[in-house]
Structures are given as C-alpha cells and as structure tokens.
Length: 131
Image 1 (spheres, rainbow, N blue to C red):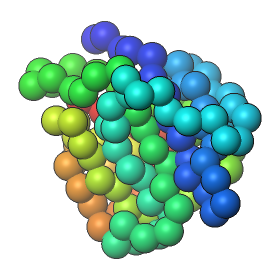
Image 2: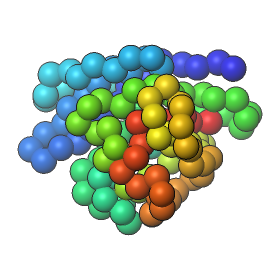
Image 3: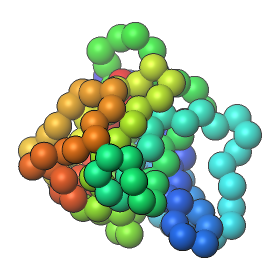
Image 4: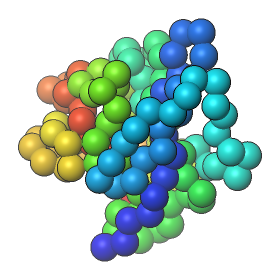
C-alpha cells in the first residue's frame, strides 16, 4: 500500500485554516494561509448533512488513480473537525472511506463518491482514506 502526504484545509466562518497532513500527524497552520495553486481538491467534508455548513477540504498534489490501493489519507483529523463531519463529496477520481477513530480504527463507512447523509457515522469521523 502506498500513501502520499497531503494538505487539508478547514474553511471556517471568516476565513480558512489550513493544516499540513501527513498520514500519522496533523497540525494547524496560521489563519489566512492559502492552498498552493498546484493543490488538487480530493474531498469536501461538510459540517452538516446535505452538503451544508463549513467545509474541511482535503487536497493533494494530484488526484487518485484507478487502483484499489489507498492513494491519500488523513490519520488524525484536526481537533476542530474531529467528530464533526456529516456529508462528503469526493473529487479528482477519488472515493472516500471514513473511520470512527484516528489512524483508521473502529467502524468505517465507504468507499463512496458522495454521501448526503452518513447514518451511524454522522459526527463520528476521526480519520479519512481516499482511493
């Protein structure tokens, strides 16, 4: 399995907060930083169902391929977004899998392209895999 480093951003009211995410680590960056122009959007993870509310953006240097291996992952979602995701849209040929606990442990949901409602995984996501 190969995993690539990635960028993730949480869009909050009044501005964006970015975090550089490596599969086993996440740290918040200064408000006002922007995603580099070369970044590709992999998923929008919404605070509310039906693609509503603030968005936790997951980006990478390029999209997913057609294989079944994991292309990108967020092992530990930043605290302000832990257990807050309620709907998801995936982009750049990616499908998403959500995990209940950090580092891909516990219950999971996926792989899927888009989900307006997450059922039992609503407000339970602590890590994400994309392929």
